[in-house]
Amino acid sequence: MRSALNRRAFLQNAIRTPVGKMTMRPNAHGELVSLLAYGAMRLPTIDGNQAGLDWGGSPAPIDKPEVFAQVDWAIEHGVNLFDTSPCYCRGESEGMLGEALARHPRNKWYVSTKLSNFAPETQTAAASEKMYRTSLELLRTDHVDYYHLHAVGMGGFEAFKKRYLDNGMLDFCVKERAAGRIRNLGFSFHGERKVWDWLIERHEQYKWDFALIQLNYVDWRHGHALNERNQDAELLYGELVERNIPVFVMEPLQGGKLAKFDYGVAEKLAPLDPEATPAKWAMRFAGSPPKVLSVISGMTFREHLEENVTTFSPLKPVDDREKAALEAAAEELVSARVVPCTACQYCMPCPYGLDIPGILGVLNRALGEKRLPDPKSPDFEKQRRQFLLDYELSVPEPLRRADHCTGCNRCQPHCPQTIDIPREIQRVDGIVERLRI
Image 1: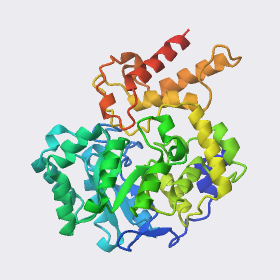
Image 2: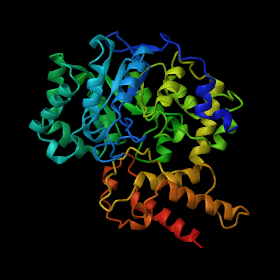
Image 3: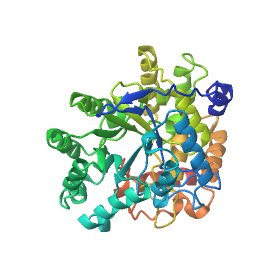
Image 4: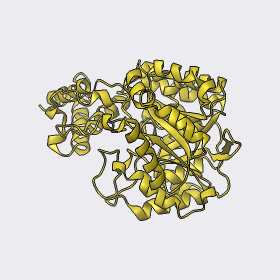
């Protein structure tokens, strides 16, 4: 069963990705947008890893020839939406993507970027306007096709007010849209219901052209169960459809968790399609709601891009039987009570050097695969060795491991999922200490 769901095997056995078959959907202006969008949040680096946000990922230079090759291949195969932000890839994403896209006619692509004024020093009107104009320069364009109020809800309503209302930036963006320098204005949403209600209730005033929400087959009905601050994607999607606001999707793979093999999930999905990878199932679900305009996926490696393009060329929407199987798989994953970390790296850098996403990833893999070491289990010794080996391989530098957490709590306010990060880090440290016998 494992080999049947292996991503590389899927690509080796798949027919050549067809050209001209990408599923397209109309935006608010009647323009056709590719259902798959190229996310430039984790661009490849020359050491074979990925660049993260302003503060995370590999320190190696971005692999410019590989990025160019991916962008060229994506456009050739029908992808015409490319998503970035000033804070992606150490601040290099917009410039790299802009250089790659400028080699193609402007009518062949749409670009999406964001007002990522998270730091207090970027929240004045002057600093925020400078960030916006810098985005235009780096992207080598005189207009942005999709401009986001980035991560609204993160930090609560007061943070939203400081970033977009008190400084007049929302009104500024509306004027830029009227001038044609912003073609579509919307927001990406992270959890806080009060902010969501404020935005939705003012749709007639601001006429949102889109909204970006976290949508996958787990968060569809279990987002709130996983994190009480979050909303179920089914609910958010329904409210957007009711107001005729086009929907963008983020986290279709839940930070990569839904692309990993899980025996409990495989038991439910493999009988329906033994050749489908976990990623293909998740991407098909994310693209199936008819009012989803585009699914944004951060694709570091060529094989990710090729598989996702193949999945959407054209998309085969999930049917009722498959929806039921995916819901059963979601319940299986929710029952494991994994930490809702999507490895977004907003919590980084840790002032004490911890690899927070790496540490939480070890815990989630053990929970998701039902192999958290249990002293009462006859397989305890095997579980113990496996957990410690995964921990040492995932966080190879001892100084970056859980036992160096001081509980300073600098990380938690930055987490879009509002995870109690120090508590979960201490949980891992306690497990490791008990297993080192």
